[in-house]
Amino acid sequence: MTSDLSLQHQPVSDFLLAVPESTTADESTDSPLPDILSAEQLQFFEENGYVAGVRILSGQQVSWLRDELAELVRPEHDGSGLWHEYHSNESTDPSTVLFHALGAWRTRPGLHDLLWHPNFVAAARQLLGGPVRFWHDQLFCKPARHGGVVAWHQDYSYWRRTQPMAHLTCWIGLDESTRDNGCLQYVPGSHRWDLLPITGLAGDMEAIRDVLSDAQWDRFQRPVAIELQPGEAAFHHPLLIHGSYENRTDGPRRAVVLNVVRDGVCSASDEPLMQGIPPIPPGQPLSGRFFPLLS
Ligand SMILES: O=C(O)CCC(=O)C(=O)O
Image (cartoon, rainbow, N blue to C red; front, side, top):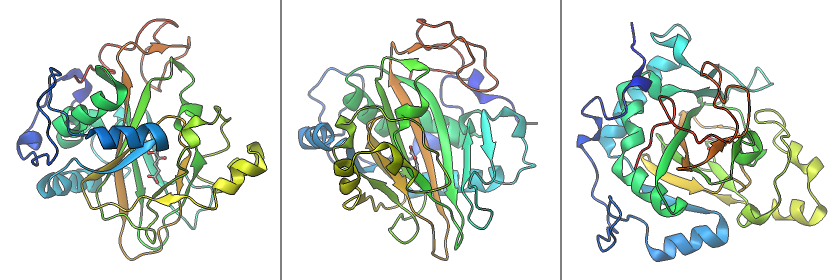
């Protein structure tokens, strides 16, 4: 029987031992981890709302996570009671499939230890400008040939129950991600737009159009396709509009997403922040078993 790894706030396996060398390490700051993003990358994030092509995982680590994921997509897997959300197909169209689940770090050692990956934590700390606290993880998998879309959205539309907005998303590919297999697509600069309402995650790709001006919609004619090698990441701002098209290739498109906040972000809700965890009173900072401090 799988034990709940949310009780462990340090690595529990050898997953992190094979850490790839950072090519841009700058050890001149006094932060606990060396910086891995250059000043140019930070400036790019500021202007565009994202930075892509950041190496996080070694080849061995990619294989490790693929193996764990292969177990988790089977609905009857060991640990199936630990998820905050589990959708074998979140798509409204049964002929296209989007596997989407929250809570993987509780169920398998590699997916757990990934939270403490030094490359991830170092980059997140730079982008958030302070200590990094875990918010939640997500798995997004599109099977070969009939993988569904993730509709255009802003992440913070789903996260208003936490304030202030000091959140960050790290999308890590476990396959080569390409235009053909439904890689992430960004609308650069849209992180400067207002917060938009939720218009759906896995149905109509263009549902967001209803809440946009014509000038905003015009920007969707020029999205940027984020093509990545396995183990590379893209980080994005909580207001950046992003989505992804179908997977029409013969291979899967799998990704692990880590969502974090700057330490000090608070609950803004009387309700549980996620299914299966106790509520945190409004105004109280995220902390405790389900929200470990990572740096
Ligand atoms: O994996 C995808 O295609 C979408 C991921 C996403 O929406 C996110 O990381 O916020």
